[in-house]
Image (cartoon, rainbow, N blue to C red; front, side, top):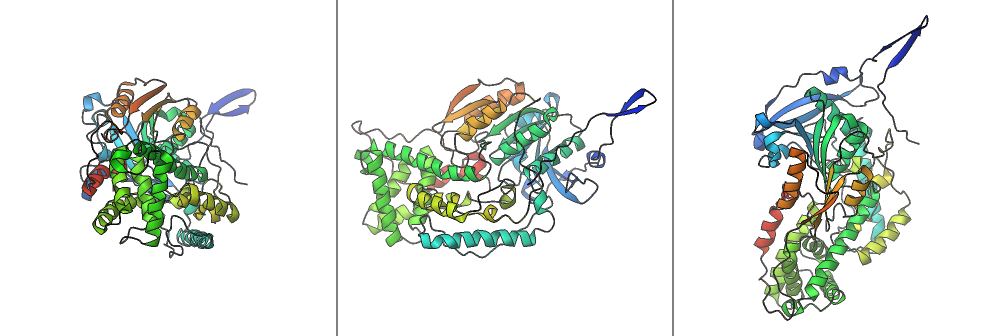
Length: 518
C-alpha cells in the first residue's frame, strides 16, 4: 500500500534542567531555496521572454540525493508601478510545456501587473525530461473496433508501458503532481516571493489545487480554468470525456432537427442521429480518400462541441450522404479538418506517468465491457479510446505516495471557470472542484471550448481580470455566454444555411485561444 508522506516543519522543544528552549529545525531545502537565479534571453520563438534553469530534488524525501533541472520563463509586469507580484501558470497536459504561457498572456491585462512565470514541469521539455521509447502500433485506430480487436488494444497499451519503463531511467516514479507542486514552491522561494498567484488550465487546475493544499500559506489568488473533477482522478475523468462528446452531438442534433428545411437531416434529435449513423455505415464500407468511419466519428465530436461550427457540421453530413462525388469529396475534406483536431487532443508529454499516480482497474474484462458500451453509445470524438486499457492499466512502477486529498485551508477564495460543452474536462468537473475548494464558479453557457481565459470571451476575461488584479470576486455562481450558434433560422422563419467552408472551419479552430497553441 502506498503511503502519503506528510512534511511538517515545526518547533522542536528541548528540555534541560527544567528550562524549555525552542529552535527552528534546519530547512532541508535551504540550499535549493537560496540558489541564485540567472536570467537570460530565451531562445527561438520565446526570445521576448527571459529564461533560467534551477535545481530541485528528484525525491523530496531525500533532498540531499539526486537532483533535476527545472527550466522557467518570465515576462516582467509591463507596468512596474502597479506590480502586485508573480503569477505562476500551467497549460495542462499532464506534460504540457509552460514556457510559452507568458507570451500567450502578453497582451492580457494580467501582464500589466504581474510578472508572469511559465515553467516546464519535471519530466517535460527544457527541464529534466522523461523520454519514453515509442512502442510499435499494434491496433488499428478504429472508433468502433470489433470485439476481436480488443486484445490488440490491451497489448499496445502494455507494450507502451513496458517501453516507457525501460527508457525512464530512475526518475519516473518521482514524476508526479505533488512533486511538481513542490518544485513550484522552490521556484517561489528562489524568486524571493512570499506568495504566488496562480492561473492553471485543464490539468493545471489540479496542479494548482494540489499546490494550495500542500502550501496554503504560499498561495494568494488562484484561477482554475477548465477544471479536473477532484473525484475522477484519473480513469473516470477520461471515461467522462466520451459522455461529454455524446452530449454535444445530441445538442447539435436537436438544433439541426429544428432546421430540417435547411439541412434535410430529420425533424428530431433521434432522426438526425439516425442519418449520422447511416453516413458512418456508408463510410465504413466505402471510405472517401482518408475519410472513413473513424475519422467521421472524430469529426462529429469536434464539430458538435464548437457551437459556431454547427451549420458546417450539418453541411458535412449532408454532403457525405450525397451520392455525388464532388459533394462527397468536399464533405470529406472538411471532415478531416475536424478529425485531425480531435486526434491532436488525445495525448501529450508525460501523460502516461502522471496519470498513473492514482490506481486504475487492472481487470481487462472491465475495460472490454466498457469498450462494447462506448462503441455503441459513445463513438463520437474517438470515445472508445477513453474506455480502452491504457498504460496505467499495466503500471510497472509504484508511486511513492497517495494522490493529495484536495482542500482549501488557509488561502483565499479562488475562481473556477468551466464551459458547459467542454469535452476534455466535462462540465460536472467545474462545480465539483468549486464545491471541494469552496471557490466561486463561472459557467460559460452553451460553449465547448477548453481553456477560456484569453481565448476571446470578453465576459470571462473581465471577471478574471477583476479578480486577479483588483481582488474582486465574481458571484458565488455566475455565468458568461459562449460563442454564438450559427445564425440559421428555425423552420418556418425563412432564411438559409451558409455554404460549407473548410477555410472557415480552420480559421475558427486556429482562434480557440489556449487550445490552439502548438
